[in-house]
Length: 91
Image (cartoon, rainbow, N blue to C red; front, side, top):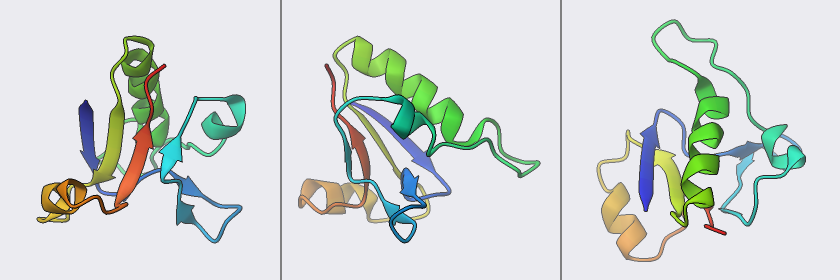
């Protein structure tokens, strides 16, 4: 699996109270429309670049997780089965 840790907790759905999309079965135009570029000077690419990386990985049978790098317990939570980010299933 590819783990992308970021300053955000995952792919956000503005149509659902800005909740995190827990699982993405396939990257469709609707999923891509949820992604935006970054507006911060210290960041590069925003969610659009993360989804581009996810496309490459899932096309090569690699699952992708996007979650918060600010959470020091992120790996323990994932190991415990908690939904703490967005997982892109491989094809």
